[in-house]
Length: 373
Image 1: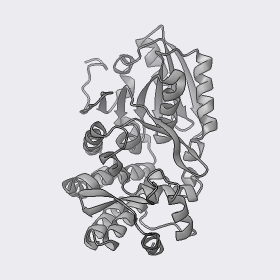
Image 2 (image 1 turned 60 degrees about the vertical axis):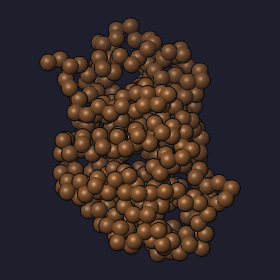
Image 3 (image 1 turned 90 degrees about the horizontal axis):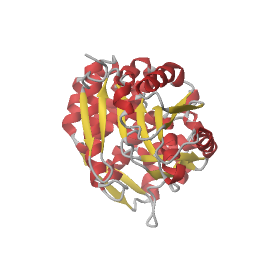
Image 4 (image 1 turned 60 degrees about the horizontal axis):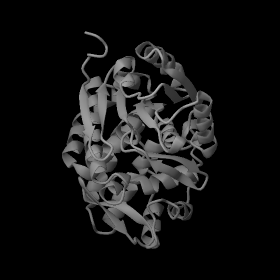
């Protein structure tokens, strides 16, 4: 059996105006024929970071050249970390496309985690007003979240993802083999986003996660592939209904208003170990969102306790880090993209598995929840 004919474990279709497929399984990066099918032109730029490129970029480049000998292929590697997802790095990525001589049928290959996927996708959206991007996520967080749905962006000092564009990928290949090289902390961070799907869409998925927690933490291939596929199905469904986040897709931000405020206030220091990374911040944010739901009388405190217990079982933080004041976090939230003229909006839940957007929450109530930790 050739690499190209090796079956994937799961295949998820994202429908809509820009439909594409998500392939999930081990060894996909080695199956260059599958990837090369999506390269329409003769120019391709691999975008990666200093952690991922040494592990996978050489093999990917060699395989693509063998599959498509006339391909003009270049590479842009940025330093790792959320703090590198900047306009300056975005400009460097565009410069790499210019040096390649990339034409309008070029493809950007985003090889890495969420930072790489967001920045590379934004560069693809802007180069010549839009070229193809193929997402090759190498972290669990990116596989279940940022690589799917076409949201691309870079950060500003004042907030996360404030400059960006909607730009759907041409294809997504989630090679679960790459998770074997993922640090345990990053695997746990990805599980936070997996938990989110159960929290907002399906409490039976929470049951499944509780039953398979040990297998997921141990890196079991089948369990991880199943968790990724189920998460992608939930996300694909909501993205197809609401590609530009004008309705139901906002539910995917459960925990993110709080989480983004924590990340921004800490200066995106998760990569250095001095702060929470994105998944960890979202874990704390989900606990705060569940607590706010209970504070508003929407949901029971029991559901909030169940969510907190599951996140802690996955080794995730559930309390606001020391040194962050409620007032500072509230100020950060006012700059969040989910705020509007009516004030702060939160994704809250009525119970596990059913969430909705709530506007006009009083600052005093938010501060009270933040003060509770």
